[in-house]
Image (cartoon, rainbow, N blue to C red; front, side, top):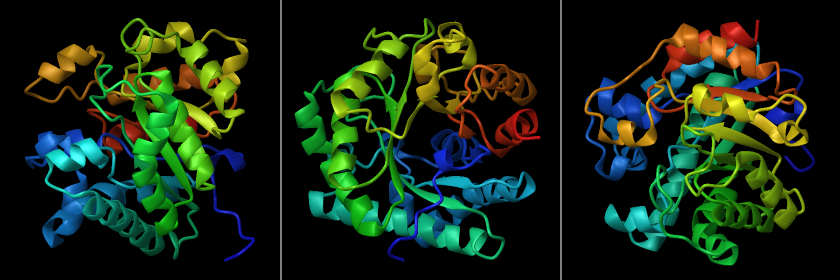
Length: 314
């Protein structure tokens, strides 16, 4: 309704929950083949939607249990033009698929959140143009804004509450997505991934990357996240008292402490230790005073996120 603000996580006093590693859950725990590691085609089939519902529903239960909201991600991390072309989608088909993916999670949000009063932030997810573990397809910020505009336009048309750029490997692409979101009037979240040394795959320092995106977008992102890395990879760069830490609002860590190269070559799931991961989150939360979203990434599922909620939301 006009004038009604969506329930965004940064506006609350208690962190929202979000999901874990969708694609690794589908591949390793459900035995589903994902061409190009893309989950979005599942939205087009009844059987696929049923599997996705099975994945998402436990996270609503966590939101109910811990009396908080949920950032509900559309399964669109690999639904941009290049990946879409590899999957056989023309641009217009891809636009409609992104819109359908958002509509799918919106329906789930109404079913699961509406009756129990769970605040649901409907999130359009934008992934990197290239690989999430390596710097590929380098673009200027202007090129990235134009390239990713198709997805952002679909999310805006479908009624998204926010847009998140996830697993960003370099600054220019992150800037472009933030500007695309701004052009469509959607709150933006930028989530960087890092290597075992705590630096972006581009070699950039995490704090410097956050500051550069803020500088070039007039601090448009609502907050930043770190995802697709184990806490042991970046804990040492989150120096207590650093001003840029106030801009970190979300954590979505991997279950495994292995490097990106090791995970890329893995044939079996490394689910790590949910309790140990939760302890890492509790330590990091003591440094991140504006943490507003907790969830997981590769190798995690609702068990890991439940342990994280126990450590951070009780």
